Image (cartoon, rainbow, N blue to C red; front, side, top):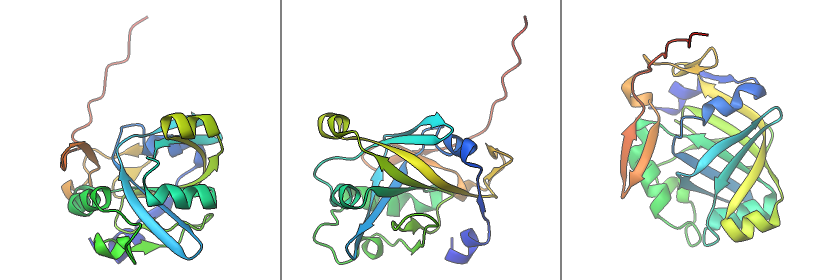
Length: 198
C-alpha cells in the first residue's frame, strides 16, 4: 500500500467511538518522539479503557527506547497495522531503536504528522489514536502499564465506517493479531449474534 492510498481514505473518528478501533484486540505500533528523536515499536497488549473521554492502556517494557521517549514527552500514538504490514510490524517489535538513526526506515515504515501530539503516526495503517499519558507511577513501574487519554482518532474508511470494522474489507487491509514468534492471525468474518429474547 502506498502512502497516498491510506491518506486519501483517512477520516476522523468521533472520540466516543475511539474505543472501537482497539476493542477487537489488534496488534498496534506505538510511536513516540522527543528532543529530535523518534521511535516505533510493536505491542500486542493494548486495549480501550473508557468511552468519554476515551482512554487506552498499553504495556511498554522498561527496556524500550520508545518508553524513554514517552516518559520524556508524555504522549504516544497507536497505529493499527494491517495484513500488508505484517513483516514491518514484526521488525518493529524485534529491532531496538536505541542505537538506530531511524528505526522507521530500518523497518520499512513511513510516517505522517499527528494532529494533536508530536509523535508521528505510521503510514499505511488502518487506524490511528493520538494519546496523552495519564501519569500512574505505580502501574508504570510495577506492571509497565501506561494509561492515556485519546486526544484524536482516525481510521481508513475502507475498513472502518459507520463506527464499525467492515466485514468486506480487502484482505490486505484487515487487522493483524500477534500469536507469538512472528505469527499473526488476520481479522476475519463478522458474525452477528441474534438479539436475546426477554
